[in-house]
Length: 351
Image 1 (cartoon, one colour):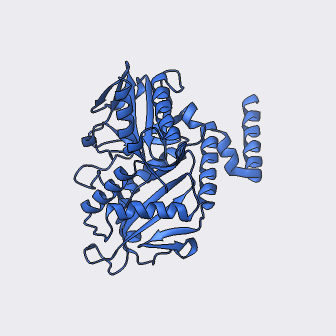
Image 2 (spheres, rainbow, N blue to C red; image 1 turned 90 degrees about the vertical axis):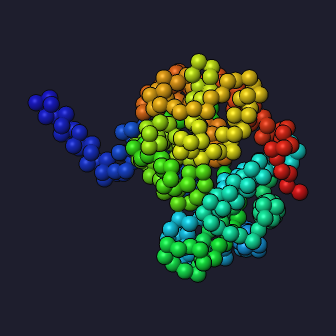
Image 3 (cartoon, rainbow, N blue to C red; image 1 turned 135 degrees about the vertical axis):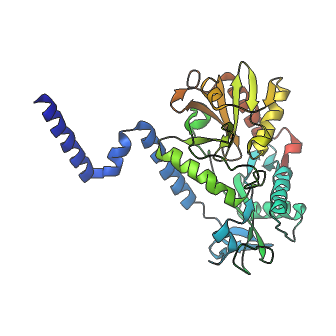
């Protein structure tokens, strides 16, 4: 009888929840999913509010509402674009772009890999980025230059298709949540494998590559996690859906090597340099999956994620489930550089 009453009560609760707000009820049953739902909603809201004045398109500043592409744009059909994610910080010396030359160099190298020819030099793109920031009166922002195949043909042969270039900028805070920088995030090993060598060029930051990343990100969010860790075809650790990863064990810092199907990130390179300056031992090496579970510390790096601690993997708590001391030291050194602009070779002032 008692069991029967429990069943009836459960059914009543389910029906009432359905009537009031079925989606909310389901999310509340899993705290992580509820938190993630809030993050998703905030992300959608933030992206809806990024509308600014100007976008640079093919050497011309264009009104936001007029910066459009045709439905037959080839990049929409085949993912044939390359892009960068760059940040401008409002340092004590004034607004400055972090490692601009390194980013635009990689942009042009990605275009070269995909046989995309544009009439602009690296210097031209650097200047255009500054113009776009100034045109939108921003002191701190995220920067998205993109080179893409536009119109002039459809089908798999892109060689005679026009190549266009655009630059957008907008204000964008902490990618994985404001609290994540301190408290860390919960992640899972994705069931989706990172793109294999000799399938997609992993060293190119290409739009088509991110279909793979999106599947991992969607799966993580729907399962109640903030982010995913992707393994390569050998079953070793590669990277997050849009971040590089670092693992700390016995005071040694490990990160997957370039041949492990990673995109060699600019922030990754910055953290490696900072760690060496702080006299930490760094190993670029193959990392087995199980090493993640017994790590002393884990963190992601990326232009969007900056330096974000990982507090659990597959619901296995990493150490004490909080940001570790080495991660905090590296974070502090990194953010201090961004705030103070102390390394002039890493910054390009907006003038």
